[in-house]
Image (cartoon, rainbow, N blue to C red; front, side, top):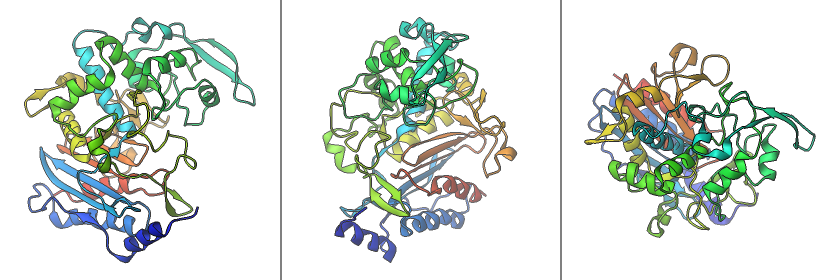
Length: 421
């Protein structure tokens, strides 16, 4: 892919040592950590930037409610020579799912439904689901059968509903694409209700509750929130989650005065960083999102953009069993249920899933630094978080690249744990 002169100059600047860093945190107070060991985080992220594996990153660590580490590295936009800032805004993609899960649990706590209710009780189009049996060489479903039971709300929370994703290869993938099913990031004039009506007509990959499969379950949960609350998902999130938590930089679609804080997207191609373009990378929508287009689709599974600071307040609330700064969003027992393992993700007992999160239930089997009971997830553009109740610890890291060979989000977690006293 041809690079412009400004892009080459920016890459030379990165490799040459002029790494842009924004040290807004003074690092003088690190209770529970060895300060010198925290410096290893800097070294690792700077090395990724200098090697051209990521354009930049922002990382945040908090323990017992106190921010221990919050730094930014590299570029938010290489071509524009815009340095990354702690307040840079990222497309968080599937990190949206945890927020939707909390919204569902809030309504559940109000007695508006039970988690074991069939989704068709509230969205009738999903009654009497079919399961695909065979597809032809063109990916067309040629045979289906009645599902053994209906999709329950808890199946959606655990990704065991039988729904898939258009961007993930599966026997149902081409059927999704042919029927206009989207992944959630779009500038087209789409509505959540219309998309879910299309989805309801298509067969499932398997019987609900029988196994784990990543898919559009959380988008359907977002629509459940709209139906039960009587409010569009963006309004519900703003009033019931973002305002109480003072998450002022988290949006489905960014206000015009925040467009300049949205980081540019990149892809790693043949070991080189290249700008993410709609022509070259089409599996997850387009670069207009979330600043242009119709701005009408509110994806509970992938649609939000946010900052490390905002998202840290959200996960801090979960760490505190549903409360932050005197505002209780969900009850203690709801958070306990959310972070309790329910279904095996990969069949070997190592990765398990609760209600909206992957849960590390066996630290030995997991084989990396961490704690029993850590719950976590990430986003498609290389963003990630984890919550550790036993250490009273959270970590959030955001970059802006897809695809990439970089494993910096995983190594960031290791580097935090090795720095604990």
